[in-house]
Length: 305
Image 1 (tube, rainbow, N blue to C red):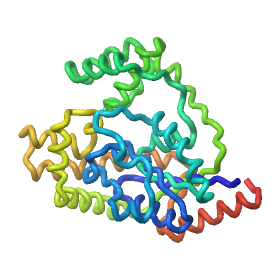
Image 2: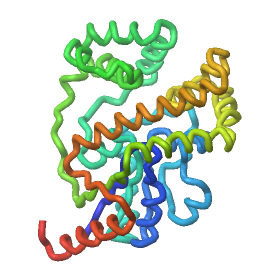
Image 3: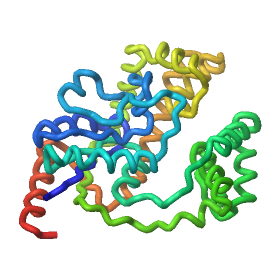
Image 4: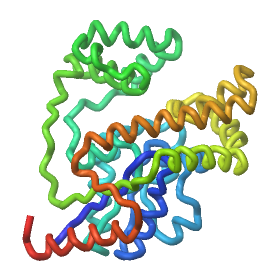
């Protein structure tokens, strides 16, 4: 049986959800969300989660399913997505994954290195270290446990630093020693699509989206979320700036501008990641996507590789 995984990825605000829905309707299939924040409940505005109307047009998995205090990772996504995919392929030869969390997509397509399950005790210890003494304290301990990974870790990504230290402490060996970089064989074909558009248009879409989020009530959404606790799920663009606003560190106008700026910075990082991936096919329309999927299915049906 032919099994095609069509990945609709790309930077934030590039139109992934709309394209994924068009593909799902054309091929009679369903969508798995590969977004590290859309999986949490109570954050639909700030994460630009598919609306009820959009979800009525195409079923989405892994959207709004976890409480804000739940732990989730690329490894969790890999496991969940691999369990869901066979159910989708019973309905259609095409399954769709849609999202801009590049590590999630990479984990599903290429596999992720085996890591020990982090115990609640270890997670609580590292979290307390981070909350009470800051990222520098976590980095200092990571340098002792794994100087090789310490030298290259992205220090602008606290979650990655924290995760590396958790694994070091749980495994009793350097995190870097567990990173093999080997891709796993998957029992399906993969087609990666990303929407191409002029950077000026793209950045304008980001600015418009941020304005729309404030009009839709992201401030109330964030206040309600933070009332539940200062969870890692809220440590992301949009909510971080709103937290500073609530604490009186920024005025509202500055907050809106800062969210737009930081979203553009995040989008540039996503683009950099994608440009390094030669397997990504850049498209400008749904018709181009349809043609690529049809061609891939035809190739698979003919037995050509």
